Image 1 (tube, rainbow, N blue to C red):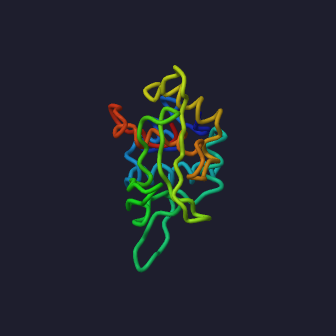
Image 2 (image 1 turned 60 degrees about the vertical axis):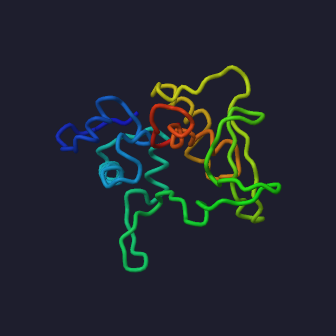
Image 3 (image 1 turned 90 degrees about the horizontal axis):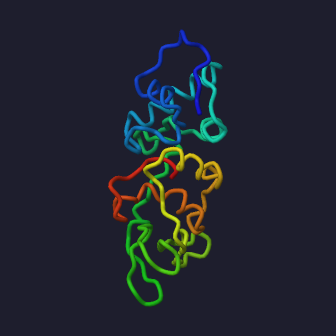
Length: 189
């Protein structure tokens, strides 16, 4: 939960919405990677740095230990920093056990609820990552409280290894529409 410590500070409508609804920044209301998405992090980072904004632990780690919301110069163009993006190589198909598979596109099925093929950065091999509950538990992406609890319980902000089931479980919301859901969700779960 985020909280404004000085009521005299003016904030944008997006940050006001997060404050009013007690939404963490990791559940950003704007489309992933949009200008508004990045500006919300920039505004929150500046207010937190100046002591006007109190953040939950996950958001504090996100703003203090990353460069999200900041820009750098790359090949003459301004690009956002610490904004995870797929590179072109990851979008290609690859071969896994003799068959062509799409990389980084979760699908339903397998021994667990979902599976995805990814390239192991250390070995260069393609691996199949099975994740999700194989029992009767459902994915409660439409419940903000359940998403926040899941992200906190599983420490989603710390999951960076794309070859681990935990990474994909935390980021399943980004692919939810392609898995049959009504819409995608930015941030963790």
